[in-house]
Length: 146
Ligand code: CA2
Image (tube, protein in one colour):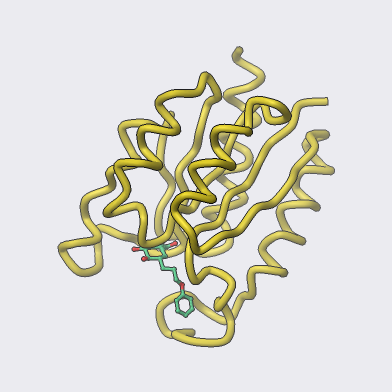
């Protein structure tokens, strides 16, 4: 069975508790539950990792090859700042899908630039929970074509 690692960046653990006007009412727990259900439907294994720390995310990406066949990542604010996460993704040979709950191109200008996008197979942005589901489906499709 193919294995997909889902990585959530900083503050996504606050979903459902603050800023519902931007990110909706969904919690990270509900997102992970919906992904686990989709993974079961698609017959893939899924694991979740969340951290507010750039280095921990870099380490998780570095170790991903021990277990994962693909990565789905919402780097959150690190999307716009992290050369380290981009380099970590470029250093591994695992297809990656970048996802965002909000449409980053509709928001403040500093969010329009993703440093991660060139290291990803593709990006899904703006569909709330569905960005993650579509991201998982995209990862599954990438693995089927491998
Ligand atoms: O839309 C997305 O998924 C983002 O990756 C979310 C990040 C943001 O920095 C990116 O530009 C776009 C923010 C995640 C923090 O989420 C919060 C949730 C509740 C309360 C505060 C922050």
